[in-house]
Amino acid sequence: MGMKKKLVAVLIVCLAISSLLFAVLWQRAENSKDDIRQLAQASAADACSQFVEYQANGEASSYWYGVAAFRSFEQAYHLLTEGTNKSSNYAFCNEVYGCLVLSPEKSQKHIAEIVEVMEILAANVEDENGYLRMADLRNNIQE
Image 1 (cartoon, rainbow, N blue to C red):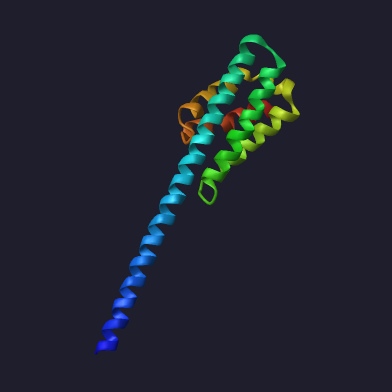
Image 2 (image 1 turned 120 degrees about the horizontal axis):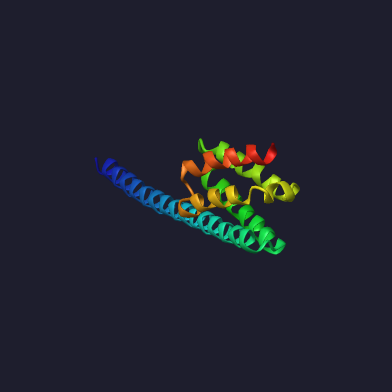
């Protein structure tokens, strides 16, 4: 009986330690997701402000800073949604990014739409309406 009680006590201690470790790791993963969400949000807001500036003054540097911020947003969003059912949203972002880089003249004609989409995502990086508008934007630029 004594040996059985010691074994149970050891198992209880091991279970408690493993539960505590799991809780700590879970919390770190959640904090990491929050950090990535904040990065995506900040990058979307930066892209939006740069594209607004381009829209106002037409300076190429503002456009390209906006493109760079868009890329940061896109990559952070990809990390945020990795392994979820939101991968199609990332695909739309990636295609728009390709247009911004490879067809700047065509993309710049749609700067008002780009600003509208980025305003939505700057307010909430997980707003599905922003990604529906992103898909429309991609189609409009590619036409």
